Length: 183
Length: 385
Image 1 (cartoon, chains in turn blue, cyan):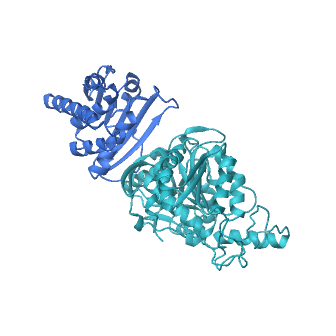
Image 2 (cartoon, one colour):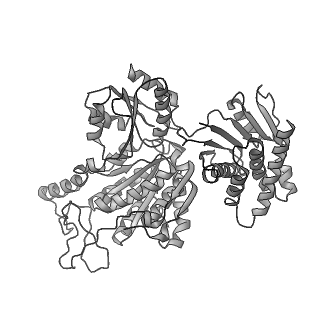
Image 3 (tube, chains in turn blue, cyan):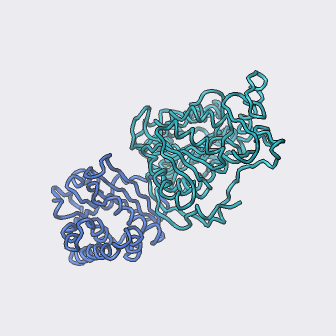
Protein backbone atom coordinates (compact mmCIF):
# COMPACT_ATOMS: atom_id res chain seq x y z
CA UNK A 1 0.00 0.00 0.00
CA UNK A 2 1.34 3.39 -1.01
CA UNK A 3 0.66 6.19 1.45
CA UNK A 4 2.06 9.71 1.40
CA UNK A 5 1.87 11.97 4.43
CA UNK A 6 1.98 15.67 3.62
CA UNK A 7 2.24 18.63 6.00
CA UNK A 8 1.59 22.11 4.62
CA UNK A 9 2.52 24.97 6.96
CA UNK A 10 2.24 28.72 6.73
CA UNK A 11 0.33 31.69 8.07
CA UNK A 12 -3.42 32.15 8.28
CA UNK A 13 -4.50 34.02 5.14
CA UNK A 14 -1.92 32.41 2.84
CA UNK A 15 -4.36 29.77 1.71
CA UNK A 16 -2.72 26.85 3.49
CA UNK A 17 -5.95 24.96 4.06
CA UNK A 18 -7.17 25.53 0.51
CA UNK A 19 -3.90 24.04 -0.76
CA UNK A 20 -4.62 20.93 1.29
CA UNK A 21 -8.20 20.80 0.04
CA UNK A 22 -7.08 20.94 -3.60
CA UNK A 23 -4.54 18.16 -3.11
CA UNK A 24 -6.99 15.99 -1.17
CA UNK A 25 -9.75 16.56 -3.67
CA UNK A 26 -7.43 15.81 -6.60
CA UNK A 27 -6.40 12.50 -5.07
CA UNK A 28 -9.73 11.31 -3.64
CA UNK A 29 -12.15 12.50 -6.30
CA UNK A 30 -10.20 12.78 -9.54
CA UNK A 31 -7.36 10.26 -9.11
CA UNK A 32 -9.62 7.63 -7.52
CA UNK A 33 -7.43 7.21 -4.44
CA UNK A 34 -8.12 8.09 -0.79
CA UNK A 35 -7.30 11.30 1.03
CA UNK A 36 -7.85 12.65 4.51
CA UNK A 37 -7.25 16.29 5.39
CA UNK A 38 -6.81 17.54 8.94
CA UNK A 39 -6.45 21.23 9.61
CA UNK A 40 -4.99 23.12 12.54
CA UNK A 41 -5.23 26.86 13.05
CA UNK A 42 -5.34 29.42 15.81
CA UNK A 43 -8.38 31.49 16.78
CA UNK A 44 -7.11 34.53 14.83
CA UNK A 45 -8.59 35.10 11.35
CA UNK A 46 -5.23 36.09 9.81
CA UNK A 47 -1.58 35.76 10.60
CA UNK A 48 -1.59 32.88 13.08
CA UNK A 49 0.33 29.66 12.50
CA UNK A 50 -1.74 27.44 10.27
CA UNK A 51 -1.19 23.98 8.93
CA UNK A 52 -2.86 21.23 6.96
CA UNK A 53 -2.07 17.52 7.15
CA UNK A 54 -3.02 15.46 4.13
CA UNK A 55 -2.68 11.71 3.82
CA UNK A 56 -3.01 10.37 0.28
CA UNK A 57 -3.17 6.60 0.02
CA UNK A 58 -4.34 3.67 -2.06
CA UNK A 59 -6.29 2.20 0.88
CA UNK A 60 -8.70 4.07 3.15
CA UNK A 61 -6.86 6.14 5.75
CA UNK A 62 -7.32 4.97 9.35
CA UNK A 63 -5.16 7.18 11.56
CA UNK A 64 -5.84 10.69 10.23
CA UNK A 65 -2.84 12.63 11.55
CA UNK A 66 0.51 13.00 9.81
CA UNK A 67 3.11 12.67 12.54
CA UNK A 68 6.16 12.37 10.28
CA UNK A 69 5.44 13.70 6.81
CA UNK A 70 7.01 12.34 3.65
CA UNK A 71 6.60 15.79 2.14
CA UNK A 72 6.75 19.09 4.02
CA UNK A 73 5.52 22.21 2.22
CA UNK A 74 6.30 25.49 4.02
CA UNK A 75 5.27 29.02 3.23
CA UNK A 76 6.64 30.75 6.34
CA UNK A 77 9.86 30.73 8.35
CA UNK A 78 7.97 29.75 11.51
CA UNK A 79 6.40 26.77 9.80
CA UNK A 80 9.83 25.63 8.66
CA UNK A 81 11.28 25.87 12.17
CA UNK A 82 8.26 24.19 13.71
CA UNK A 83 7.87 21.28 11.31
CA UNK A 84 11.32 20.47 9.92
CA UNK A 85 12.14 18.22 12.92
CA UNK A 86 9.09 16.09 12.08
CA UNK A 87 10.06 15.45 8.43
CA UNK A 88 11.05 11.85 7.66
CA UNK A 89 14.84 11.32 7.33
CA UNK A 90 14.59 10.76 3.56
CA UNK A 91 11.74 13.26 3.24
CA UNK A 92 11.12 16.00 0.75
CA UNK A 93 10.98 19.72 1.61
CA UNK A 94 9.20 22.19 -0.67
CA UNK A 95 9.57 25.81 0.40
CA UNK A 96 8.76 29.36 -0.58
CA UNK A 97 12.34 30.44 -1.16
CA UNK A 98 11.96 34.16 -0.46
CA UNK A 99 10.14 33.57 2.84
CA UNK A 100 12.00 30.53 4.10
CA UNK A 101 15.73 29.93 4.44
CA UNK A 102 16.21 26.22 5.12
CA UNK A 103 18.90 26.38 7.80
CA UNK A 104 20.32 23.20 9.34
CA UNK A 105 18.60 20.97 6.83
CA UNK A 106 18.77 17.37 8.07
CA UNK A 107 21.03 15.20 5.89
CA UNK A 108 19.09 12.97 3.51
CA UNK A 109 16.31 15.51 3.06
CA UNK A 110 15.80 16.70 -0.52
CA UNK A 111 14.79 20.34 -0.75
CA UNK A 112 13.33 22.36 -3.60
CA UNK A 113 12.53 26.08 -3.40
CA UNK A 114 10.32 28.35 -5.46
CA UNK A 115 9.74 32.13 -5.38
CA UNK A 116 6.00 31.53 -5.21
CA UNK A 117 5.06 34.96 -3.88
CA UNK A 118 7.07 36.71 -6.61
CA UNK A 119 5.48 34.51 -9.30
CA UNK A 120 2.05 35.25 -7.88
CA UNK A 121 2.82 38.98 -7.95
CA UNK A 122 3.95 38.73 -11.57
CA UNK A 123 0.58 37.16 -12.36
CA UNK A 124 -1.10 40.14 -10.73
CA UNK A 125 -2.36 38.71 -7.43
CA UNK A 126 -0.08 37.85 -4.52
CA UNK A 127 -3.08 35.89 -3.17
CA UNK A 128 -2.43 32.96 -5.53
CA UNK A 129 0.92 32.05 -3.99
CA UNK A 130 -0.71 28.97 -2.46
CA UNK A 131 -1.82 27.82 -5.91
CA UNK A 132 1.73 28.29 -7.21
CA UNK A 133 2.81 26.03 -4.32
CA UNK A 134 0.16 23.44 -5.19
CA UNK A 135 1.43 23.39 -8.79
CA UNK A 136 4.99 23.16 -7.51
CA UNK A 137 3.99 20.19 -5.31
CA UNK A 138 2.35 18.40 -8.24
CA UNK A 139 5.33 19.11 -10.51
CA UNK A 140 7.96 17.88 -8.08
CA UNK A 141 6.21 14.91 -6.49
CA UNK A 142 3.70 13.53 -8.99
CA UNK A 143 1.67 12.38 -5.95
CA UNK A 144 -1.39 13.89 -7.63
CA UNK A 145 -1.77 13.76 -11.39
CA UNK A 146 -1.71 16.95 -13.45
CA UNK A 147 -5.21 16.33 -14.78
CA UNK A 148 -6.66 15.63 -11.34
CA UNK A 149 -4.93 18.61 -9.75
CA UNK A 150 -6.24 20.99 -12.41
CA UNK A 151 -9.79 19.64 -12.09
CA UNK A 152 -9.62 19.94 -8.30
CA UNK A 153 -8.25 23.46 -8.61
CA UNK A 154 -10.96 24.61 -10.98
CA UNK A 155 -13.70 23.20 -8.77
CA UNK A 156 -12.27 24.90 -5.66
CA UNK A 157 -11.62 28.51 -6.67
CA UNK A 158 -14.18 31.32 -7.06
CA UNK A 159 -15.83 31.77 -10.43
CA UNK A 160 -14.05 34.34 -12.59
CA UNK A 161 -10.62 33.51 -11.14
CA UNK A 162 -10.11 30.24 -13.02
CA UNK A 163 -7.56 31.43 -15.58
CA UNK A 164 -5.52 33.35 -12.98
CA UNK A 165 -5.40 30.29 -10.76
CA UNK A 166 -4.66 27.93 -13.61
CA UNK A 167 -1.75 30.15 -14.68
CA UNK A 168 -0.45 30.21 -11.11
CA UNK A 169 -0.74 26.43 -10.90
CA UNK A 170 1.07 25.89 -14.21
CA UNK A 171 3.90 28.29 -13.33
CA UNK A 172 4.46 26.33 -10.12
CA UNK A 173 4.14 23.00 -11.91
CA UNK A 174 6.67 23.90 -14.62
CA UNK A 175 9.11 25.28 -12.05
CA UNK A 176 8.87 21.99 -10.17
CA UNK A 177 9.32 19.87 -13.29
CA UNK A 178 12.39 21.84 -14.34
CA UNK A 179 14.04 21.55 -10.90
CA UNK A 180 13.45 17.78 -10.82
CA UNK A 181 14.78 17.41 -14.38
CA UNK A 182 17.91 19.37 -13.45
CA UNK A 183 18.49 17.42 -10.22
CA UNK B 1 -40.51 7.18 1.31
CA UNK B 2 -37.44 8.73 -0.26
CA UNK B 3 -35.78 12.09 0.18
CA UNK B 4 -37.04 15.39 -1.19
CA UNK B 5 -34.58 16.14 -4.04
CA UNK B 6 -34.54 19.83 -3.07
CA UNK B 7 -32.40 19.05 -0.03
CA UNK B 8 -30.08 16.51 -1.62
CA UNK B 9 -26.74 17.68 -3.01
CA UNK B 10 -26.15 14.57 -5.12
CA UNK B 11 -22.54 14.10 -6.16
CA UNK B 12 -19.05 13.27 -4.99
CA UNK B 13 -17.71 15.92 -2.66
CA UNK B 14 -14.63 16.65 -0.56
CA UNK B 15 -16.28 17.78 2.68
CA UNK B 16 -15.48 18.05 6.34
CA UNK B 17 -17.65 16.26 8.86
CA UNK B 18 -19.50 19.39 9.94
CA UNK B 19 -20.54 20.22 6.38
CA UNK B 20 -21.38 16.58 5.68
CA UNK B 21 -23.63 16.44 8.74
CA UNK B 22 -25.43 19.56 7.50
CA UNK B 23 -25.98 17.91 4.12
CA UNK B 24 -27.26 14.81 5.92
CA UNK B 25 -29.79 16.92 7.78
CA UNK B 26 -30.97 18.62 4.58
CA UNK B 27 -31.23 15.25 2.81
CA UNK B 28 -33.19 13.85 5.76
CA UNK B 29 -35.75 16.63 5.38
CA UNK B 30 -34.65 18.92 8.20
CA UNK B 31 -36.14 22.31 7.45
CA UNK B 32 -35.69 24.11 10.76
CA UNK B 33 -32.56 24.69 12.80
CA UNK B 34 -32.24 27.02 15.75
CA UNK B 35 -28.71 27.28 17.00
CA UNK B 36 -26.15 29.23 18.91
CA UNK B 37 -22.93 28.64 16.98
CA UNK B 38 -20.04 27.26 18.99
CA UNK B 39 -16.66 25.85 18.01
CA UNK B 40 -16.13 23.18 16.74
CA UNK B 41 -19.70 22.79 15.51
CA UNK B 42 -20.10 26.22 13.89
CA UNK B 43 -19.62 25.03 10.32
CA UNK B 44 -22.74 22.85 10.55
CA UNK B 45 -25.06 25.80 11.13
CA UNK B 46 -22.99 28.14 8.96
CA UNK B 47 -23.64 25.87 6.00
CA UNK B 48 -27.26 25.30 6.99
CA UNK B 49 -27.85 29.06 7.15
CA UNK B 50 -26.35 29.41 3.69
CA UNK B 51 -28.19 26.48 2.09
CA UNK B 52 -31.63 26.63 3.68
CA UNK B 53 -32.99 29.67 1.77
CA UNK B 54 -32.49 27.72 -1.48
CA UNK B 55 -34.08 24.56 -0.09
CA UNK B 56 -36.96 26.26 1.68
CA UNK B 57 -36.87 26.40 5.48
CA UNK B 58 -35.65 28.40 8.42
CA UNK B 59 -32.45 28.92 10.35
CA UNK B 60 -32.55 31.12 13.42
CA UNK B 61 -29.47 32.15 15.35
CA UNK B 62 -30.74 32.46 18.91
CA UNK B 63 -29.36 34.40 21.85
CA UNK B 64 -28.09 31.31 23.65
CA UNK B 65 -28.38 27.53 23.79
CA UNK B 66 -31.41 27.52 26.06
CA UNK B 67 -33.27 29.56 23.47
CA UNK B 68 -31.92 27.44 20.62
CA UNK B 69 -33.10 24.16 22.11
CA UNK B 70 -36.56 25.38 23.17
CA UNK B 71 -37.19 27.09 19.83
CA UNK B 72 -36.41 23.81 18.09
CA UNK B 73 -39.11 22.11 20.18
CA UNK B 74 -41.65 24.72 19.16
CA UNK B 75 -40.90 24.06 15.51
CA UNK B 76 -41.64 20.33 16.00
CA UNK B 77 -45.24 21.19 16.81
CA UNK B 78 -45.27 23.49 13.81
CA UNK B 79 -44.70 20.30 11.81
CA UNK B 80 -41.05 20.55 10.84
CA UNK B 81 -38.15 18.15 11.09
CA UNK B 82 -35.76 19.95 13.39
CA UNK B 83 -32.24 20.00 14.70
CA UNK B 84 -29.93 21.97 16.93
CA UNK B 85 -26.16 21.87 16.92
CA UNK B 86 -23.72 22.51 19.72
CA UNK B 87 -20.64 21.49 21.67
CA UNK B 88 -20.04 20.75 25.37
CA UNK B 89 -20.68 24.16 26.96
CA UNK B 90 -23.86 24.56 24.93
CA UNK B 91 -24.90 20.98 25.56
CA UNK B 92 -24.84 21.64 29.29
CA UNK B 93 -27.32 24.47 28.82
CA UNK B 94 -29.54 22.31 26.61
CA UNK B 95 -29.99 19.60 29.23
CA UNK B 96 -33.21 21.17 30.49
CA UNK B 97 -34.81 21.01 27.07
CA UNK B 98 -33.49 17.54 26.40
CA UNK B 99 -35.79 16.45 29.22
CA UNK B 100 -38.67 18.47 27.78
CA UNK B 101 -38.07 16.99 24.31
CA UNK B 102 -38.11 13.53 25.85
CA UNK B 103 -41.26 13.81 27.93
CA UNK B 104 -43.16 15.54 25.14
CA UNK B 105 -41.89 12.93 22.63
CA UNK B 106 -40.63 15.57 20.24
CA UNK B 107 -38.73 14.03 17.34
CA UNK B 108 -35.52 16.07 17.13
CA UNK B 109 -31.82 15.73 16.47
CA UNK B 110 -29.01 17.18 18.58
CA UNK B 111 -25.59 17.30 16.97
CA UNK B 112 -22.84 17.49 19.59
CA UNK B 113 -19.38 18.12 18.15
CA UNK B 114 -17.40 17.18 21.24
CA UNK B 115 -14.45 19.23 22.46
CA UNK B 116 -12.30 19.07 25.56
CA UNK B 117 -14.13 19.95 28.80
CA UNK B 118 -15.36 20.49 31.49
CA UNK B 119 -16.63 24.06 31.06
CA UNK B 120 -15.14 25.96 28.11
CA UNK B 121 -12.17 23.57 28.19
CA UNK B 122 -10.48 23.17 24.82
CA UNK B 123 -12.63 24.99 22.23
CA UNK B 124 -10.76 23.85 19.12
CA UNK B 125 -9.59 20.40 20.24
CA UNK B 126 -11.30 17.01 20.45
CA UNK B 127 -12.68 14.83 23.21
CA UNK B 128 -15.34 12.15 23.62
CA UNK B 129 -16.28 13.21 27.09
CA UNK B 130 -19.99 14.02 26.63
CA UNK B 131 -20.98 10.38 26.19
CA UNK B 132 -22.43 10.03 29.69
CA UNK B 133 -23.85 13.53 29.77
CA UNK B 134 -26.25 12.88 26.91
CA UNK B 135 -27.48 9.75 28.65
CA UNK B 136 -27.67 11.05 32.20
CA UNK B 137 -27.34 14.84 32.08
CA UNK B 138 -31.03 15.71 32.21
CA UNK B 139 -32.94 14.82 35.35
CA UNK B 140 -35.37 11.95 35.68
CA UNK B 141 -35.41 8.57 33.96
CA UNK B 142 -34.99 8.83 30.23
CA UNK B 143 -33.60 7.05 27.20
CA UNK B 144 -32.07 8.57 24.10
CA UNK B 145 -30.37 7.25 20.99
CA UNK B 146 -26.79 8.29 20.25
CA UNK B 147 -24.84 7.62 17.05
CA UNK B 148 -21.06 7.91 16.65
CA UNK B 149 -19.70 8.71 13.17
CA UNK B 150 -16.01 8.19 12.47
CA UNK B 151 -15.74 9.92 9.07
CA UNK B 152 -17.36 12.74 7.09
CA UNK B 153 -19.21 10.09 5.04
CA UNK B 154 -20.71 8.72 8.24
CA UNK B 155 -21.53 12.24 9.42
CA UNK B 156 -23.76 12.40 6.34
CA UNK B 157 -25.16 8.87 6.57
CA UNK B 158 -25.73 8.83 10.33
CA UNK B 159 -27.37 12.26 10.40
CA UNK B 160 -30.01 10.82 8.08
CA UNK B 161 -30.28 7.78 10.34
CA UNK B 162 -30.60 10.09 13.35
CA UNK B 163 -33.57 11.88 11.80
CA UNK B 164 -35.18 8.60 10.78
CA UNK B 165 -34.82 7.12 14.26
CA UNK B 166 -36.12 10.28 15.91
CA UNK B 167 -39.25 10.10 13.77
CA UNK B 168 -39.69 6.37 14.27
CA UNK B 169 -39.39 6.45 18.07
CA UNK B 170 -40.18 10.07 18.85
CA UNK B 171 -37.10 10.51 21.00
CA UNK B 172 -34.23 12.98 20.85
CA UNK B 173 -31.38 11.45 18.85
CA UNK B 174 -27.79 12.59 19.29
CA UNK B 175 -25.07 12.61 16.67
CA UNK B 176 -21.93 12.35 18.79
CA UNK B 177 -19.26 13.89 16.63
CA UNK B 178 -15.94 15.24 17.88
CA UNK B 179 -13.64 18.04 16.75
CA UNK B 180 -11.49 15.75 14.60
CA UNK B 181 -14.38 14.15 12.73
CA UNK B 182 -16.03 17.58 12.43
CA UNK B 183 -13.02 19.24 10.87
CA UNK B 184 -11.62 16.27 8.97
CA UNK B 185 -12.13 16.47 5.20
CA UNK B 186 -12.64 13.40 3.03
CA UNK B 187 -14.60 12.19 0.05
CA UNK B 188 -18.33 12.16 0.73
CA UNK B 189 -20.67 10.47 -1.71
CA UNK B 190 -24.20 11.84 -1.67
CA UNK B 191 -26.56 9.55 -3.58
CA UNK B 192 -29.60 10.45 -5.64
CA UNK B 193 -32.61 11.52 -3.57
CA UNK B 194 -34.47 8.44 -4.80
CA UNK B 195 -31.87 6.21 -3.12
CA UNK B 196 -32.18 7.84 0.33
CA UNK B 197 -34.78 6.25 2.58
CA UNK B 198 -36.57 8.74 4.78
CA UNK B 199 -38.89 8.02 7.71
CA UNK B 200 -41.82 10.36 7.50
CA UNK B 201 -43.45 11.72 10.64
CA UNK B 202 -46.23 9.48 11.88
CA UNK B 203 -49.18 11.78 11.29
CA UNK B 204 -52.47 10.86 12.92
CA UNK B 205 -55.28 9.70 10.68
CA UNK B 206 -57.82 10.39 13.38
CA UNK B 207 -60.41 13.12 13.18
CA UNK B 208 -59.93 16.08 15.50
CA UNK B 209 -62.55 14.86 17.98
CA UNK B 210 -61.02 11.38 18.31
CA UNK B 211 -57.34 12.25 18.46
CA UNK B 212 -55.38 11.93 21.69
CA UNK B 213 -51.87 13.28 21.18
CA UNK B 214 -50.17 10.89 23.62
CA UNK B 215 -52.15 7.73 22.96
CA UNK B 216 -49.59 5.10 22.01
CA UNK B 217 -49.86 2.93 18.92
CA UNK B 218 -48.97 -0.78 19.19
CA UNK B 219 -45.22 -0.08 19.29
CA UNK B 220 -45.59 2.40 22.13
CA UNK B 221 -45.23 5.48 19.93
CA UNK B 222 -48.10 7.96 19.56
CA UNK B 223 -49.07 9.54 16.23
CA UNK B 224 -48.55 13.26 15.82
CA UNK B 225 -50.34 16.28 14.53
CA UNK B 226 -49.22 19.83 14.08
CA UNK B 227 -50.62 23.12 15.20
CA UNK B 228 -53.37 24.39 12.96
CA UNK B 229 -54.72 21.05 11.72
CA UNK B 230 -57.78 21.26 13.95
CA UNK B 231 -56.67 18.67 16.53
CA UNK B 232 -56.66 19.82 20.12
CA UNK B 233 -53.27 19.38 21.64
CA UNK B 234 -51.69 20.21 24.95
CA UNK B 235 -47.96 19.78 25.29
CA UNK B 236 -46.43 19.98 28.75
CA UNK B 237 -43.32 18.98 30.63
CA UNK B 238 -45.55 17.84 33.48
CA UNK B 239 -46.45 14.18 33.70
CA UNK B 240 -49.50 13.87 31.48
CA UNK B 241 -52.24 11.55 30.31
CA UNK B 242 -53.06 10.53 26.76
CA UNK B 243 -54.73 13.86 26.13
CA UNK B 244 -51.57 15.64 27.17
CA UNK B 245 -53.22 17.07 30.27
CA UNK B 246 -51.26 17.17 33.53
CA UNK B 247 -51.87 13.99 35.53
CA UNK B 248 -49.79 14.24 38.64
CA UNK B 249 -50.28 10.86 40.27
CA UNK B 250 -47.97 7.90 40.91
CA UNK B 251 -50.13 5.82 38.59
CA UNK B 252 -49.91 8.16 35.61
CA UNK B 253 -46.20 8.72 36.28
CA UNK B 254 -45.60 4.97 36.22
CA UNK B 255 -47.62 4.51 33.03
CA UNK B 256 -46.04 7.37 31.13
CA UNK B 257 -42.41 6.99 32.17
CA UNK B 258 -42.41 3.21 31.67
CA UNK B 259 -43.91 3.60 28.22
CA UNK B 260 -41.35 6.22 27.26
CA UNK B 261 -38.34 4.27 28.50
CA UNK B 262 -39.61 0.96 27.15
CA UNK B 263 -39.86 2.39 23.63
CA UNK B 264 -36.06 2.25 23.66
CA UNK B 265 -35.25 -0.43 26.25
CA UNK B 266 -37.51 -3.03 24.64
CA UNK B 267 -35.93 -2.33 21.28
CA UNK B 268 -32.30 -2.01 22.35
CA UNK B 269 -31.25 -5.17 20.52
CA UNK B 270 -32.97 -4.08 17.32
CA UNK B 271 -31.28 -0.68 17.59
CA UNK B 272 -27.84 -2.24 18.05
CA UNK B 273 -25.38 -1.30 15.33
CA UNK B 274 -21.87 -2.66 15.94
CA UNK B 275 -19.39 -3.03 13.12
CA UNK B 276 -17.42 -6.14 14.00
CA UNK B 277 -14.20 -7.32 12.47
CA UNK B 278 -12.53 -10.67 13.28
CA UNK B 279 -14.19 -10.89 16.69
CA UNK B 280 -15.06 -14.60 16.60
CA UNK B 281 -12.36 -16.51 18.47
CA UNK B 282 -10.20 -13.46 19.10
CA UNK B 283 -7.79 -13.26 22.03
CA UNK B 284 -8.56 -9.61 22.56
CA UNK B 285 -11.45 -7.49 21.32
CA UNK B 286 -11.07 -3.73 21.07
CA UNK B 287 -14.36 -1.88 21.63
CA UNK B 288 -14.26 1.64 20.24
CA UNK B 289 -16.43 4.38 18.78
CA UNK B 290 -16.14 7.64 16.84
CA UNK B 291 -12.74 8.99 15.86
CA UNK B 292 -11.00 6.67 18.31
CA UNK B 293 -12.10 3.69 16.24
CA UNK B 294 -9.83 4.84 13.42
CA UNK B 295 -6.84 5.19 15.70
CA UNK B 296 -7.71 1.80 17.19
CA UNK B 297 -7.79 0.29 13.68
CA UNK B 298 -4.13 1.21 13.22
CA UNK B 299 -3.26 -0.42 16.54
CA UNK B 300 -5.33 -3.52 15.75
CA UNK B 301 -3.56 -3.98 12.41
CA UNK B 302 -0.17 -3.66 14.10
CA UNK B 303 -1.17 -6.20 16.74
CA UNK B 304 -2.33 -8.66 14.07
CA UNK B 305 0.98 -8.14 12.26
CA UNK B 306 2.62 -9.38 15.46
CA UNK B 307 0.57 -12.57 15.25
CA UNK B 308 -2.15 -11.74 17.78
CA UNK B 309 -5.79 -12.55 17.18
CA UNK B 310 -7.42 -9.21 17.76
CA UNK B 311 -11.01 -8.34 17.01
CA UNK B 312 -12.45 -4.87 16.66
CA UNK B 313 -16.02 -3.94 17.55
CA UNK B 314 -17.03 -0.41 16.71
CA UNK B 315 -20.14 1.04 18.31
CA UNK B 316 -22.07 3.00 15.71
CA UNK B 317 -24.97 3.21 18.16
CA UNK B 318 -23.60 3.97 21.63
CA UNK B 319 -27.02 4.52 23.25
CA UNK B 320 -28.97 2.39 23.87
CA UNK B 321 -25.86 0.51 24.86
CA UNK B 322 -25.64 -2.87 23.05
CA UNK B 323 -25.49 -4.89 26.27
CA UNK B 324 -26.56 -8.20 24.72
CA UNK B 325 -24.03 -8.10 21.93
CA UNK B 326 -21.13 -6.97 24.11
CA UNK B 327 -21.95 -9.74 26.61
CA UNK B 328 -21.83 -12.21 23.71
CA UNK B 329 -18.53 -10.86 22.42
CA UNK B 330 -17.07 -11.32 25.89
CA UNK B 331 -17.64 -15.06 25.44
CA UNK B 332 -15.47 -14.92 22.30
CA UNK B 333 -12.32 -13.43 23.83
CA UNK B 334 -10.05 -13.38 26.84
CA UNK B 335 -10.00 -9.61 27.37
CA UNK B 336 -11.47 -6.40 26.07
CA UNK B 337 -9.72 -3.10 25.49
CA UNK B 338 -11.70 0.15 25.41
CA UNK B 339 -9.93 3.27 24.13
CA UNK B 340 -11.82 6.55 24.47
CA UNK B 341 -11.02 10.26 24.55
CA UNK B 342 -12.07 10.68 28.16
CA UNK B 343 -10.98 9.30 31.51
CA UNK B 344 -13.45 6.43 31.41
CA UNK B 345 -17.10 6.67 30.30
CA UNK B 346 -18.39 3.97 27.92
CA UNK B 347 -15.92 1.57 29.51
CA UNK B 348 -18.32 1.41 32.47
CA UNK B 349 -21.05 0.17 30.18
CA UNK B 350 -18.73 -2.43 28.66
CA UNK B 351 -17.79 -3.61 32.15
CA UNK B 352 -21.45 -3.77 33.16
CA UNK B 353 -22.31 -5.85 30.09
CA UNK B 354 -19.32 -8.16 30.53
CA UNK B 355 -20.14 -8.56 34.25
CA UNK B 356 -16.66 -9.67 35.25
CA UNK B 357 -16.42 -12.55 32.76
CA UNK B 358 -13.27 -11.12 31.15
CA UNK B 359 -10.97 -8.24 32.11
CA UNK B 360 -11.87 -4.87 30.57
CA UNK B 361 -8.91 -2.54 30.10
CA UNK B 362 -9.46 1.18 29.57
CA UNK B 363 -7.12 3.23 27.40
CA UNK B 364 -7.99 6.70 28.62
CA UNK B 365 -7.03 10.12 27.30
CA UNK B 366 -7.92 13.53 28.71
CA UNK B 367 -8.58 14.94 25.22
CA UNK B 368 -6.97 17.64 23.08
CA UNK B 369 -5.86 15.21 20.40
CA UNK B 370 -6.37 11.54 19.62
CA UNK B 371 -4.45 8.61 21.12
CA UNK B 372 -1.10 7.60 19.75
CA UNK B 373 -1.82 4.21 18.11
CA UNK B 374 1.16 2.83 20.06
CA UNK B 375 -0.61 3.44 23.39
CA UNK B 376 -3.58 1.37 22.27
CA UNK B 377 -1.24 -1.29 20.87
CA UNK B 378 0.59 -1.52 24.21
CA UNK B 379 -2.71 -2.11 26.02
CA UNK B 380 -3.72 -4.79 23.48
CA UNK B 381 -0.39 -6.56 24.08
CA UNK B 382 -0.92 -6.27 27.84
CA UNK B 383 -4.45 -7.68 27.53
CA UNK B 384 -3.21 -10.59 25.40
CA UNK B 385 -0.72 -11.75 28.01
